[in-house]
Length: 269
Image (cartoon, rainbow, N blue to C red; front, top):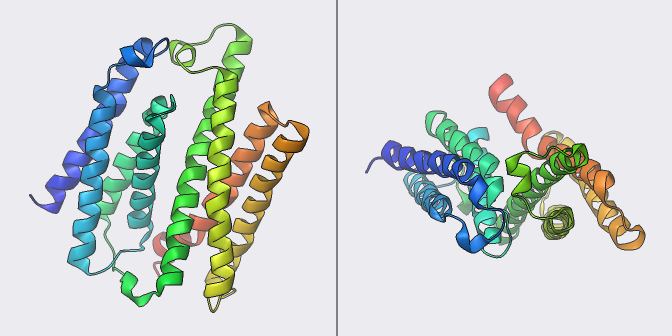
């Protein structure tokens, strides 16, 4: 199979999974045993094929491409994989309505806007660990941000006493909040590893193209860490948790993709 065929198959499975999740939403609420498992099986297939595509392009290019769309596709793949792993024990599969189409779009863009690869072999083990920790942290906090957005919609609709079927199918607000903070704690752990490894192992950390990334990442870390401390000591929850999570993720999004977007798509560097 060609690269295009492999990517197209993964994209199709992602989209079909998302459509089926929407189709079977009314069958999800009371028992996970009664939930139609086909969307999740399709999503596992999509992620598996996405991984194969990534490995094949890595082998073909003799390195990983750190272009904007290739990196976004890789992050989207990790987010989808983490979501499916979480869905083995937690009722989070409905987030696939957002995650899987985004993964499909990012893969399609990476397929059509390929760029020069930069081999990981040029990096030592410390830099490789820093890159991996950064990607995992961003992916976990991405899911947390989606969870926060969903929690905000759920809270608003429950207060209006006219929740839609999708909202009725979600776990309780307490369960959703608990899951949110679990995701945040895991994300902060890997973000801490990323920042510490960056300070210790990146020789020119404050080079011009890294200054804003470092500052924004530190601000995001402070926000997420402050939220976790506030949750533990003062019982912060609800709107406070949602707003802090979204603000922290926006800063992290700008840190990870802001400069790359400007340099690659606007300045063409």
